Image (cartoon, rainbow, N blue to C red; front, side, top):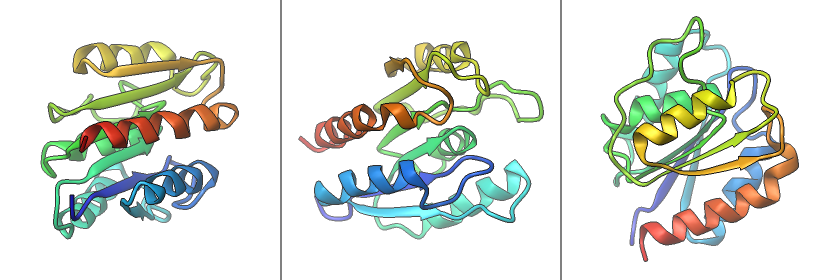
Length: 167
């Protein structure tokens, strides 16, 4: 399928080409996907970051897969309906936390949630509640919020997910 694009959204204090996104982008490119990673550095508000993601997504020719970690997971979910996402891949998504808007209304699309049992930033129960409501495929790992120890498994899950979307 021409125009397969995945758009990554990094977490609050992360960067657009951090360890996780670099590894996952390599997986996507190996499957023939175009890769974008939105740079939110210097944008302090959730609303400002969401506006940037929506602008980026609207410039794409096809309905993207949106992927995000922590606050980036929240943003990916929030942008999924307006951008008519073809899939969501969320890692430790930041839902129902103080200072964040309520969990957004999310597109009904294939969704994967990965969350660490030892996450001390976003309680695993938040990810599970979202996954249950969305009917998402869920992977729980013995890892912390950054999920770096589980990166090989996460890369495999993204590979499988992208393969399943256009099989």
